[in-house]
Image (cartoon, rainbow, N blue to C red; front, side, top):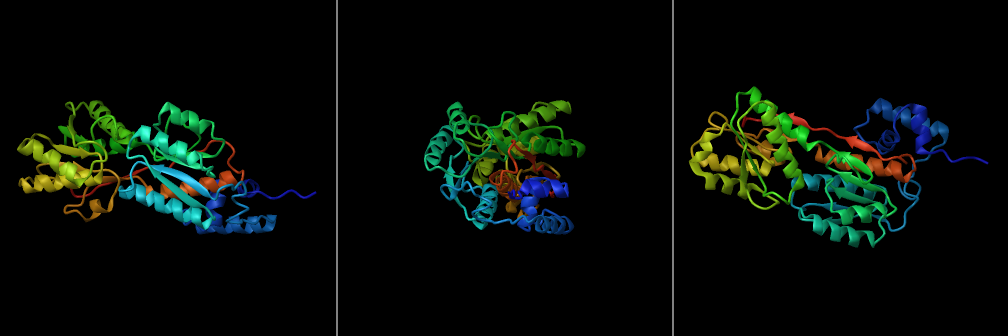
Amino acid sequence: MSTRVTMRDVAQAVGVSPMTVSRALRDDPTVSEPTREKIRQTAQSMGYVYDTTARAFRTQKSGFVAVTLPSVNNANFAETFRALSNGLEAAGLQLLLGSSNYRVEKEEQLVRQLLARNPEALILTGGHHSQATRDLVRSAGMPIVEMWDLPDDPLGHVVGFSNANAMALIVDHLVQTGRRKLAFVGASKGADMRGAVRREAVIEAAQRHGLPPVKLMDAGPAPVSMRHGRAAIDHLGRDVGQFDALVCVSDPVAFGCLSAVQRMGLRVPDDLAITGFGHFEIAKVANPCITTVNVQAEHIGHEVVALLGAVFDNAADTPQRIDVGCTFVRGETS
């Protein structure tokens, strides 16, 4: 009796991971062309057929994958969502979206509603959840992916990056350029957990470098945006000149801060450095362009799709932890 060749079999024959096989057979450009060709040839010689619909997702019950996002207005989350939607649609699945508005209690409500619809898998943004959500998810009996974070106690698979490492890159750069007196501009405590991690990471990095205590500037409840950054600086007034640098929780907040200090006549970066986070489009078109960190928002979505392809093909039966990393991007504001 013949045994069906699986994605795992192809991966072992080539000497790569099942997820690399999944990406290669979808012509994902993150896999080099020589590796893609080797995988295609090996799959063909072994008689493996990559069916992007029923075969690859043979556990299909509902025809959709559920995902929670903190916000639908955030451009980075939108990039991740597009990558997820396009990749899953190519595999015959639709994406069902719920927005938590940065509230763990709202996420809990969404998870209950989404699980009641019996999705193929559940994708959660972040690694901070209520205990009730954790209990619901662990008893759901379906693939679970947490994305955008690298939680210490994951619920299942993880695809993300370290917010702490990202902020350390920012602070290290500021110290190298002679900045010592830092202020962090972010959301009020208690809502945006990723923002909270960034705030604490800036404080810890400043302490590591022996800098004065970081001034914490509350820009308002999450989600904070350009107008919040501008309002925070307007509230502080010309006292902002006491700092060497403003470390902002996101690029939109950094743009708002930049606009406000420029109206005061302060020169950036000569009088004051400003940094953002996320490598949003606005960081690239601002004048001057904003120093930031690229967190690979679109790539996160691609990696989740590849991971689910491997999971549904029984080629990733143990929890996967994928760190997509982040890259410091020096602009003209520091």
